[in-house]
Length: 365
Image (cartoon, rainbow, N blue to C red; front, side, top):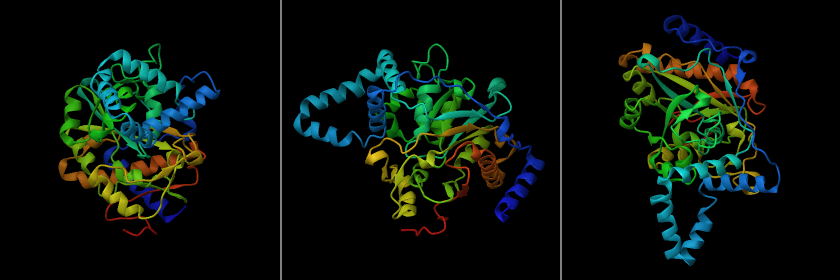
């Protein structure tokens, strides 16, 4: 075992002794959730998958949209106004989009539950769902929201009331950059959403829902697709989500998508500098490429695992730094425990980077 592994084990043992942080279950004991597969594997299905990836990542439709705006400015503007201003307000339209997205989603992404008990917010308990890593645009979660929000008879209406069956029936609200709500397909499939700001997230709890957020943000998106033995989590000194959870007496449910890092090739030049600027301007400053230069992923063989809640509610606001350090230790321990569930990550290590801590070999450009 490496010195890093020994220090992680020691830190985890100390944290468990003083805070009751759960020990991850063995990989052999976790359960996979059966997500219904979509019928059809022919040319039409492949075309649907192609279209969904190009529309959800926006950039795939920008050249066509720009061309059409130049050629038919009045008509295209009217169509866009009708789409954003009228159609999205109708439930039948959102349901239709959900059905189309489900058909255009690959069956590759899988979901496993590693938690010991059902997630519950009974008795006034609060939870915060933290998604790791960010990927280009939370890519596997886009798929899982469409295919796994409602696993029962109403699976075609993936945005009906925000209930997420994959998360034990919690009524969730996705918190992300405000612009994402305007992206085609995202707004329809995630009807309940809010900005990723402290005040907005507090509002989610007040409405009786559970916030879902990605603490790594757009900075972490820039680190998608880094080659080598490491996966990078942009959480070094990023403590805002921990402070908010402690303030609200909420526990954090971490999830990790193994294999997300292998979905796209990304440009390496100036990566850390772009990661710093990405969060400032609210744009994921990452250049990516999938199969044959398209937005179709190189691989969608991902496995998302949900873990036991981290007990942030047992810390005080004077202990934010300690809680943050314990959370990173817990997340790394979970990563090491379950990385064998995916071929892409079985030999990788998770490292934490941040504005003042670039990974080895990356200049701050």
